[in-house]
Amino acid sequence: MPVRTTTVTAEIGLHARAAAVFVRAVIDSGQPVTIAKPGHPAVDAHSLLAVMAQDFERGSVVELAIDNAKAEPGVSEATLEDLVHLLSSQHGKLKDPASQT
Image 1 (tube, one colour):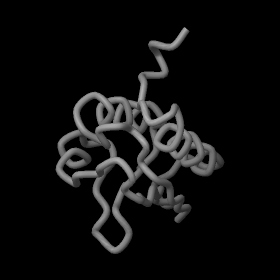
Image 2 (image 1 turned 120 degrees about the vertical axis):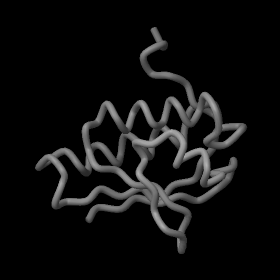
Image 3 (image 1 turned 30 degrees about the vertical axis):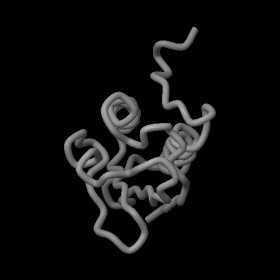
Image 4 (image 1 turned 90 degrees about the horizontal axis):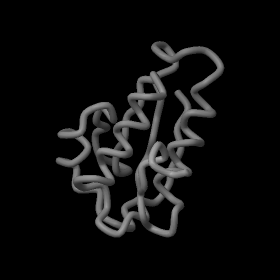
């Protein structure tokens, strides 16, 4: 199971709009992604409610994982890298990639 660790840099953490942007990226990937704080149970990253309930604040270290048994072959590593980039960049502002032109 590929796993990546990153830090949430969005100013308000993964709440409201930032969480929605992240969950949309997970859904669009088509991969079985989970997210967790290290040492805590993982939640389905496709669920906005589950992601918001975990209280991933700015500066939270998170682990993203994809279940290889359910993943589309060859795309899980790239998917995780894209999601890590989404969470840890953009100067702390999680923006909808679809709205950027």
